[in-house]
Length: 466
Image 1 (cartoon, rainbow, N blue to C red):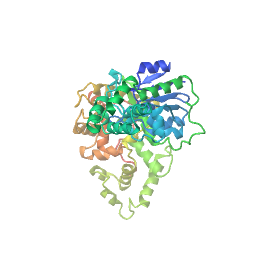
Image 2 (image 1 turned 135 degrees about the horizontal axis):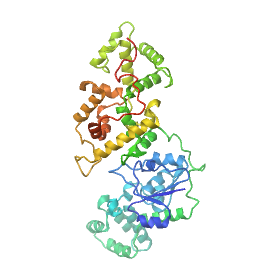
Image 3 (image 1 turned 30 degrees about the horizontal axis):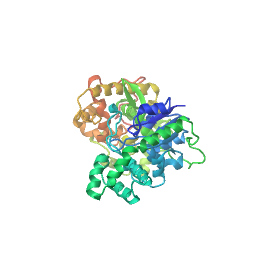
Image 4 (image 1 turned 180 degrees about the vertical axis):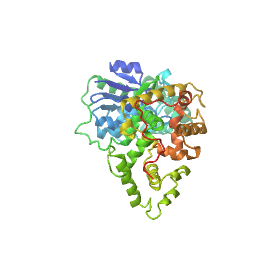
């Protein structure tokens, strides 16, 4: 069993490691981190802090995916408290005051736990104060008789009116002095100095102490929880493909990038993809005889009016066809229309299942991964438009990428959108973003050689006889 703790400004990582010996302490969680971690059944994941705004936050479905697999997931303090308050019926466990405030509906605004913090190099040091800390401190001051309930409420409202990035005691003093015109804040400040409150840190310590004590409440999803249904979908599969992968060329190459590399560069992909699409259209298995499948697909085109018996040449009027396609037979042109209409895959949902079975072998995947890793490493050495945001594309202009694709696929530049669909993609602009990190490697080294490649037919050859 392994313990993982996602932690940032709420608690020092060294203290967390002392509270839960053996735990693997990670930075604040964001979308994909849990899928990349891929914990096993019986492992425990503790979420304290998480990123949002500039990074996509951890998704509910990611957590549900692992709860359904028998992983114990618990949260407190900040992002962990938010997700636990939202998912506790399904078995995510929560601990601490912040979790209870959200679970019970006392607090409903996410920004109460939001803070500005320094980067990892500075240990995620907090640079603002969360409103939830002020809320709890004011409540404790009122219980101690330092403030009346009305004074505490006014000070809380004053803090709420401040942007979360600017929240802090000095900003609150200025705002309270201007707004209230009494000494309530000074009385609170004097009491708070003697009784400092950091409820997010308190909750993080509580969660980790409960974990170290093997508290029975920190258990995986069980029969007492609401059943988890329909969580493992193509969406989670695509998220996992973007998050998971293997290291090649010194960088992590995701499964999604590996799949895209094969779709773009493997010489057999267009033909294998065409056979697969047509098989699906006629409800045949992927292993069915391609010639029989194409015959059935032609009959389907006739039945649906795509290939009129009385005027088969009308198929050439389809916007899915290019000038080069006019050299095809009407039947072959009709099949090309079907492939381009029903074959494209959304770039956001690429996963290993996007590949035909014949190109999903370990050897082909390894070759694609090796090339992509080396190309990405080379691309990272090039200057980027904005050094502060190196993840942004556009190291190469769109027209450079387009010319490269047209050359790789041996198609006229004007017919590139149709070739994009022949390679299983929907839109040229989305494909550019996928290909751009590979461009330097392709320009320097050319496309990779895939093992066991035996040409089936040229990418744009005919599918049926004239």
